[in-house]
Image (cartoon, rainbow, N blue to C red):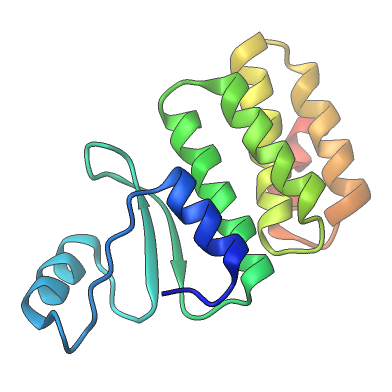
Length: 150
């Protein structure tokens, strides 16, 4: 399904993949598309065990970005399960291994939120805002974190 063996490995290790082709599985594609509002392909949805969407990747993205986005999705799954330390680790791994991807600034942001949630230490947010300013100043995530500087 994916030509990059790194993607195959991550998907097989961390996900239960389901592929619905728009033509080959038209009825299922329509049903899932309506349920999740998937209007474009490819659409990769990271769902929790209850079927709640936690992360979405729409359209084609190169393998490095796709890997980072999948890992970001794993962080969101852990965060929503209130596994904040695990979530922080997953988010920080995205920043460490894929710093130049679109996923990295978001991961940096959520790593700080996860650290705050696990420690109740507001300095984690201020530190995160400084890290985002240093590494991703021109992103929406820097703007979102800017309130934490004060």
